[in-house]
Length: 298
Length: 330
Image (cartoon, helix red, strand yellow):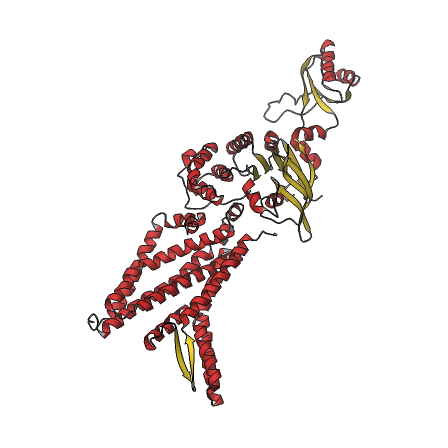
């Protein structure tokens, strides 16, 4: 742990990032914007003068939580990767990369330092939103499980997406190319995959309807698994589906469906999301370290 | 003396282009080695291999006994590298810059504060301790970068064009700094286009052209090896002797191989003659030793020749460089 905290790259980056008024101005503007969103959401949902503990207040609480969660999703999906996309290519462009590569700093420390500095700021933004998020608790309608699972998902997504930006930065020569690749990848992950999944589901429904059958229990089971797995690749889909199953089925880790005469057990998307993203994050970390460590042939 | 930098058969190819061709070179501990050559000769490529940034195609390069290919970490511990072009971080103070690189070289935190003060004193940047790095002048940045190379007290400094782009004052300061580092026992391997500077501070040089080492050795050996004979300039009092007669007499003296002159160079446009650009100086190609040269001078004086100046001319590194390299397109 102390190695992580004493990482020279992380210290340098954080010192630079937190120096002067810029970081505090950004933080203030962010909190003002978040307060505006919370107030706007609260006013819409509490138009009928909700009483704490009543159904209306619970709905308002859930809406506030969802609004702040949406902001957090945006932060980890776009702001974190935006920081890391220029982290390594920027060193090359600034002509400081060779200076670092001739030091004793291991490639792992270099990559970890860049990751820590990018994530620290994103986590700071997530952290300062907690007081606003706690308003949802005051209004009710939010369980501890929902809160914990959502924050763990945000944490895992933040690490994975930041590592994706870092990998792009190590793989591309310029920051512009790395930033374009990072945002293209994030847009595909957040919007492209749900669109493709939705189109595939629509096509399958039409096909089953045309064939005049549901495709049989096996096909239905496979389609259900495919749906859950594809939901687990997407942060908003994982949050929404897991939330729905928490509420409707009172399920935490798994749920069951009866298909034909068989009861099929399905893991909730959130554990799948965590497993899948941690594996991808590990691969991205190793791949980035390999790229940084590589001695040039040119 | 043991060789601290050893290159044996070092070769680097990029497709059909051979950037370094079978380079073999040994540099002893404590030497200040000037690596000179035209643009594109392979100097920077050699330095990038020595600093573990580039993989050689063939051959070996070792620093302090460690192979740059097999043990790059040990090589990095032994060297301090200053590239020809380098960037600085924005939003970083001078002391933070040194502290950051000291941390990257595993210098313990407790030792860093004192070490930073010492380095800033060495490169004369103490008053700029809390200044932001990007506000420093080019010369100050070069000195700071040199201080950075010393944070882990390396045995070898590899400096690529350390004085390039500097004004005359900054260039002199850099030269003095290199002398101080030499006195501290550092082995310095540096490239430069400024030959007078190389001649001033180097103990040995290597000349590279088209990736091949065309000559290497001590500066004195290179200069003496350039000419087969010594060149002696003799200046006589204007109008006091017939130069043609003097030249004829000199040709008959032991050791004198040839006599040329008198010089008929026109004085410079500003009218200030340099003392040699007149019509009263003869140049001798002399093959004798110092005793023979002394006897020649004594003979001239005893014969009553009005000698105003009598001295051996030293060739400079530019002569050596021009003699050994053929320039672009050859």
